[in-house]
Image 1 (cartoon, helix red, strand yellow):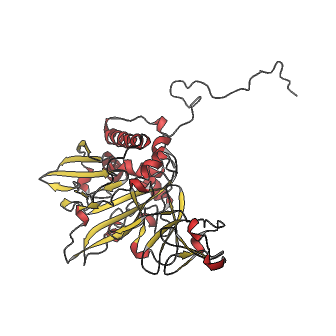
Image 2 (cartoon, rainbow, N blue to C red):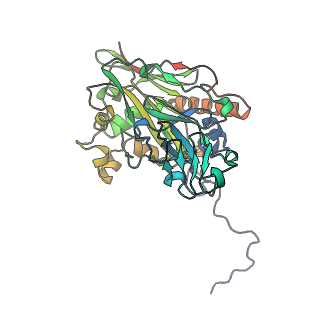
Length: 410
């Protein structure tokens, strides 16, 4: 038996000074909680709550209650028998059982446990076991959030009611002709896979996906040179890139010199989580889709998209799922070995972890868009902390957003 003489008074640590880039002594990585944590009371979460977010598709919001998790909160989405959608906290304010098992009626949803009936605004209309239906039912109100429907989506506002901004409109989704329609999608990835309608959550922070939009160089490497041509050959040409701040977002302007013409591509992000990416089929002109990267919680997000399409077109999201293929296989049909050798957006983004360690990043000149986006988000978080309104979420009249994003050939 080995005896240790004069044992040290302090416990031994194996975390020393890292030398010459070696792994020994490496400090634990840290993520930027200011930008990534979205629960109630967090800096980013409070800023996020000042905007409208899609929480469901209008077509699938019915009188059957749905579970919704957004910004770290568990909610119930339903449509009453009069056709009005409602979004309530999931735990009944009476005894705390979930309203997921509630029954939707003409004026709201009735709890399965003791029959309390709540309207879409949380008002308690009936307390079934109480004399007279509840003589003090007006004192009980289920926590709720305002919802509005637009473009075939149900949007929710989760911030202070006295600061509620108008739900934005987008010019590319307005004034449809008789031979056009809007198509909606609630999957988190329709290109690059990773999720499905049955499992719609991406298992990592919304910010990773959002930053990907202002990173045009990954299109050249990941989608063209590393995994083969996943989109179009023209997108594999190294672009000249300029990033431009918008009134409440960042535009990426990429110019590619092709053999016979100049190709100018503009991609947009808008605060706090809107992405507008032009067609990867290189359809000329303005983009025809708007998508929202909605934080579910700190470690998950999902996407909702709306695209403008012809009434006789094949569904755009079905068509796009076949664009990024490997030897004729869609993302969902590929084996794990194929995913490892031919990664796509899902592999690259989920490979950063559920939240990246920002302390370990070494940002370079091609990351200018990422830096601009983070600074813009940080400024809006600070504005809310100081009692102001974040850009693009000011109360007032309806606002029409004119989209710049598109494919332009010169």
